Amino acid sequence: MANMRLIVAGAGGRMGRALVRVISETPGAVLTGALEAPGSELLGKDAGVLAGLPENGVKLSADLWALSANADAIVDFTIPGATIANVAIAAQRGLVHVIGTTGLSASDMAVIKSVTSRAVVVQSGNMSLGVNLLAALVKRVAQSLDESFDIEIVEMHHKAKIDAPSGTAFLLGEAAAAGRGVDLHARSARGRDGETGARRPGDIGFASLRGGTVTGDHSVIFAGAMERIELTHRAEDRTMFAMGAVKAALWARGKAPGFYTMTDVLGLTDF
Figure 1 (tube, rainbow, N blue to C red):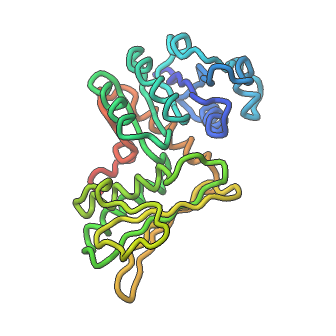
Figure 2 (cartoon, rainbow, N blue to C red):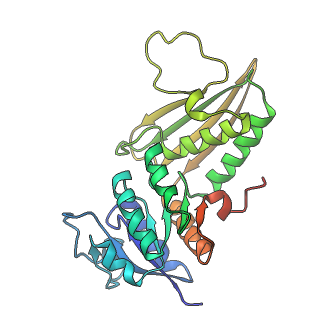
Figure 3 (tube, rainbow, N blue to C red):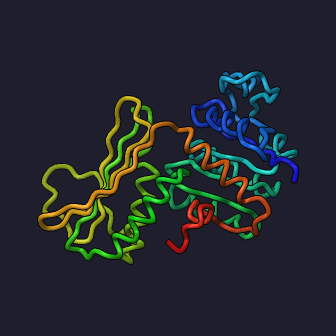
């Protein structure tokens, strides 16, 4: 089978450059396009050079329609507005759309899911193997413990991260809510400040820390009477997210139109 031709969205950013490096090292994958925001000073630059590799001849462009004429998939770690703008073109061109963008709203997710009757979308708040295994464990523990155990999710990221809580924190929160059989949006507690009153039984709490160069730390705490269970994942390099995303793109090739997650990619649906 021919190499899968991938476009990297946000190719000039930190994740984009990591994706370019990982694609160059992955058998069966080839970089065919590098997308960047209109007006970026990086437009026209060589994607390989920006990623610390030899020149590869793939220049950063703001024209997804042109780039997608000779591509099989787009890997998208950008911002919600850019991802939503990419959704329609990816679907119209028949591209696999791998979405690792965080900060997506309910309306953003509705737009993404609206194309999955005719397109393949793989979306996750975190593309790493470890985090998705953690989510499966969180769901199982939440199923096993009743509301006498309070659930708190604590995450820390670098000081430049613009959304909070993180997409991974929400991924873990959704896993906990699924285990408990509740709606996360109805039962989440965020942004506690001042006289909040006692903790409401059954809530799933979130706390976000920002500072330094932390790639991503996440802990899910099950706090009961006189004991705690803590499940933790620490990311040491964003390359692992890029590796997971490229794995997802290769996995999705030839799949029926639909909405998939890393749980599907990693075969964790029955965990």
